[in-house]
Image (cartoon, rainbow, N blue to C red; front, side, top):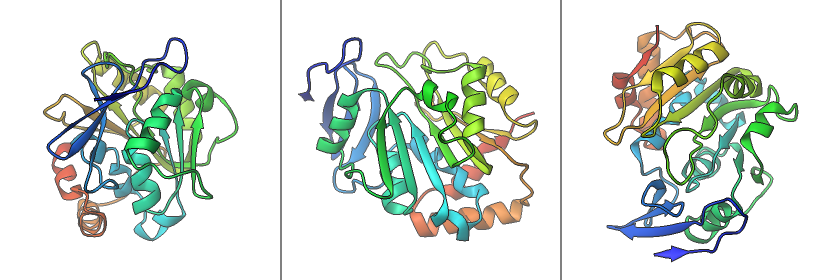
Length: 253
C-alpha cells in the first residue's frame, strides 16, 4: 500500500493497492476509484469505464482523430490515457485533487502534458459554468466521486446543463451513476431535462452497480445495422467490447 499525505485541507489522501497484476486507486477508503493492468497500462480495465467510451458508437469513424475529449474527474487516468494514447485525441482532464494527478503520474503511467494532453487542476462545476470550452468538446466523460463513493459529487440540473453547453453539435456525454446514496431515477431525470428530448441512453448496471448514462447533443439517425457495423469496427480497432454494449444499451423513454 502506497500513500501520500493530504495536500490540500478537506481533500482526501490518495493511496494504491495491488492484486493479481492490477493496481487500484483509492481515496483514503476501500472504495476503488480506478484501476490499471500493470502489464497493459493504456488499456481500460474496469467494465463501466470501458462503457464510458460508448460515445464512439455515435461518431463517424473517420472523424475520431480530429475530436476533443474531456474527462471531469481523472480517477486512475484510464479514460484520459486511452483517449490520448490509443485514439490520438486532443484530451483535457479536469481534476480537483492534486494528489490524484501526482498518483496518476507516479503509479498509473499518465503521460506528461503535451500539445495533445492537458491535465488541469480545477473544479468541474466552474469548468462547465465557464465560456472557455463552450461548444468545443466532442466527448465529455463525467465520473465525479469523493472518498465515500456515496453519490455523484456534482449532480444538479444546472451542472448537467453546463455539461451540455460544452458539447459540439455532434457531442456526446457519458456519465457514471453509482453510489449507496445514489438516486438513479432522480439523476437520470436531471440529465434528460438538460439534453434534447429523446437523446438519452442507459446501460444496464454492471455487477458492481455502476450505471453509465449516455446523452447526445444531436439526434441519432443510425440504423441498428450501422450501429452494429461501428461496434464491430471499435472491437477490432481498439479492443473495446462494443458489440456487447449494444446488448445492454437502450434509449430511455
